[in-house]
Length: 153
Image 1: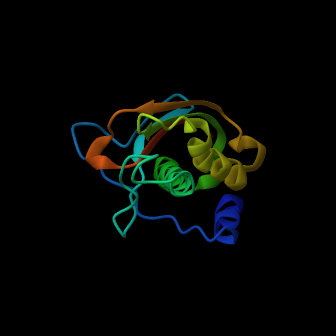
Image 2: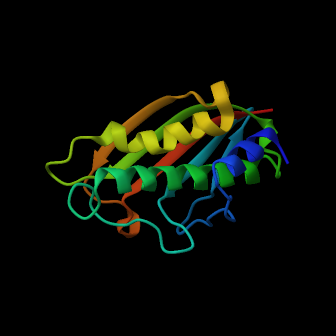
């Protein structure tokens, strides 16, 4: 087990099987030492967190949704690294999308759920550039979607 997986275990995080694509795309693409990971929604074995943030979903639940996206991203990272998360050299960038209601403006605080997980799991290598965007709708009514670019060894 890698140091990253030890950290995840201490946080109570168990990585799921990576989510398969739901349309005509692949879960990740490697180009040189960069891996571009397709957007991961706030889904889990229980169905995940769906709804409009600020209406159906409060800030705390939305942060949990973003963290869930982060868990799914790390599962994809593990697949991209052939099962060895120690090969992740750096989380370069996260782009977070929040299905936000018209009066909800705390988009960056929501995406912190994913950002905080990356730093907790990868330490300084988890510190990343980021975008946090409020959107009208997300696929299948999920509350949050996050994609990533990571550097691998």
